[in-house]
Image 1 (tube, rainbow, N blue to C red):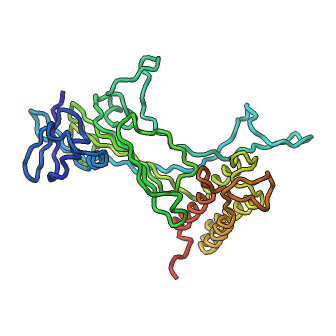
Image 2: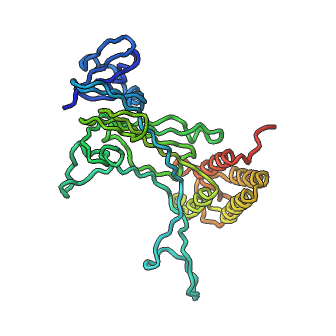
Image 3: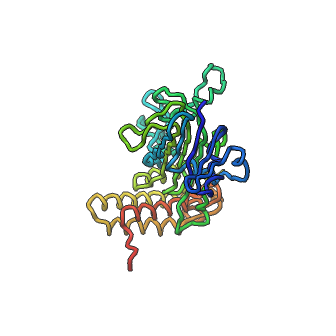
Length: 353
């Protein structure tokens, strides 16, 4: 077993230390030079303070016979994910979902985009082939650098924090309250992305120990250490291509039992797609003014056609049709905040008067 010592700064971090590390831990305060045995750290800490230490940049461990070893957290760049992706219902060997053209033998695929999923695979293995849970030292091996080298490691803490940015529009729909999940059994690893706000981030922090001192950053500043902290991040991005794909998915998914898609007005759907294509063409030629005007027209057209209830009849367009805006399917608000995000990203909206 590795005896573990963690260095902290000030007594305020003591409770955080208790949350982040498990048994056989001594916490030593570098400011006051006081030591805090484990039995004094077992009360009064919530999961939020546990996040503080698990995401800290300095974690120090030592063996009884060795000097202290410092390891800064390894923070990975955010990986972009999107609300929707290009997709189809079949392959050349499988006909899939195609349109029907009567006597004509030519048909086309009707599914052009599919909803995005953030799928976080920890790398858990079915060791015995019968559904048995693998040993604790194999948990989260896909996100532990030591595992890739075959080093023995022990997970101390796992935290996932999801944060949404504050929105100007539809702020009551896309609330910016962070979500924190603590401990492997409580970590959601499957996140549907279709209605998520652009700029939303997921941060996975893993604190683990190795019984052998290991240099986790190669030629980087870290020295061989017994404790290691790795941070993996994903960020929902949006651009004009993803906006087009999201519109396509909204034209494929049903609005309840109405028999209509989430964008139920057919003419409006093609109008919005036209604005997206125009904005892209303008950006390709460096015309940010034209792109801004096209996105502004998109925003006005969409905002004017939000509908909270399903159409009374599966009409092609007209009264009662538009873009779904319900608690379960906030498609209209989703399009509005996407346009706002994309316009800011490319600097095509002139915010200065």
